[in-house]
Amino acid sequence: MTQAEPLPTLLIIPTGIGCDVGGFAGDAIPAARLLASASECLITHPNVMNGGSLYWPDPHIHYVEGYSLNLFAAGEVFLQPVRQQKVGLLLDAGLESDLKKRHLQVVDGCVASLGLDIGPIITTETALSINLEKGLSGSSWGNIEEPDVLLRGAEKLKKAGATAIAVITRFPDDSDDLETKLYRQGHGVDIIAGAEAVISHFLVKHLLIPCAHAPGLAPLPINYDLDPRTSGEEIGYTFLQSVLVGLSRAPDLISKSTMQTKENSFFQVKTLLSDRNLGAVVVPEGALGGEAILSCIQKFIPLIIVSNQSVLNVSSSKMRLDLQTDYQDKKVFYAENYLEAAGLITALRHGINIKSLRRPIYGVQELN
Amino acid sequence: MNLEFIELELDWPPEVSVFELKNYILSKLMSYGEPLRWAITSLTTYSEETKQKISIEAVFIIDKDKAKVFNTDLH
Image 1 (cartoon, rainbow over the protein chains, first blue to last red):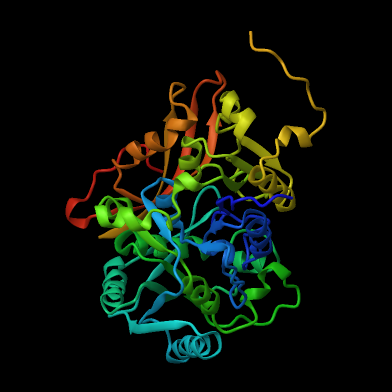
Image 2: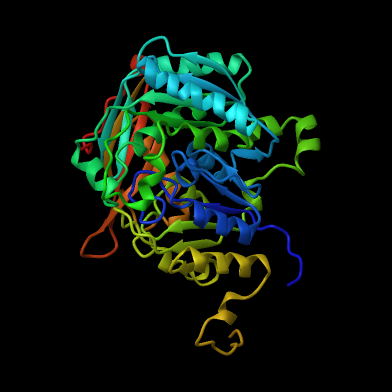
């Protein structure tokens, strides 16, 4: 095979919608690794890469939080790869002292054993109160009662030199909850995931630096009927380690307005990733109604739609993609799984006509 | 400021293509507050097959000092 340039690819598996692949504890990491290998440049988000205690650093994977991913897909933000972020830690004052200490020990471990640069560390002025919600669709959502407290803490970290922020908030313990029981058995949605996404969206919106969230939860009692996809969240005391590893190499977020100054546009343009570089976006079949996907459709970016069941059914036909025959015929591809999606990315990357790979194959037709 | 989770329905007029859908939705959402995180969570087609309703779940940033008056199609 001839050498081909990387094909920047966006992998989206929305948070809190119970995807069969990616709806649990980093269980889409193998798919992300495969697509990163096929594309040599994968942009994806914490829901895909955070496996509680488990993580996989990959030089071809860019860890980009969901709000910034939306801005990136919209062309409002560019991504600047970095060697290392200085990850500030924002701890909820509502964390009990033992739970707080567990998280600080994770920080010590990540510095001592992984070589990460972590700090400054601060605690919020008052305890943050998190409400977990569920939409009519079955998706998980959530809310912060005192967003100003959260924001003030994060602003202090940024001012003190943090270039990325990991935030740990005390989430309600819900081990007896039916949702949690179902989740641990591999059914239903991750009930806390939606609130986590809201927290990180909120911080990125205001600070425009990489941010990600880890929930502070008391350890769950052992479960002998655990779905393997949730195991990454059962084998440690915190979910922080994967967040710190992801953030430590998360690309800087460069706003379009910053780029419009002459000096920045001159020297950065070659090293930045922009939406214009995107060669494909990979998304579950029923989850076509997210903001980043709509931006990609708007820009005619090739869409790889993967069968990956969730609680949503926002499909290509419901989105009237079938009415856009030119886009549908040339730029919308369907994959039964992420193995097939990797094949499609390889074909796009190497300029192999995907129609040549399918049967039946039809003869050419002259234009009327 | 406050964050609020809201579920709402919008009409998707036939003349708005999928390529224009994001801007169309954002223009409608702005009347509720500043959208922080949102997604289309279902689409319903009516019998005449030209009219669709979009269900959206969203979290908005609401400025306490400039609290919006919400439209009546909120759930």
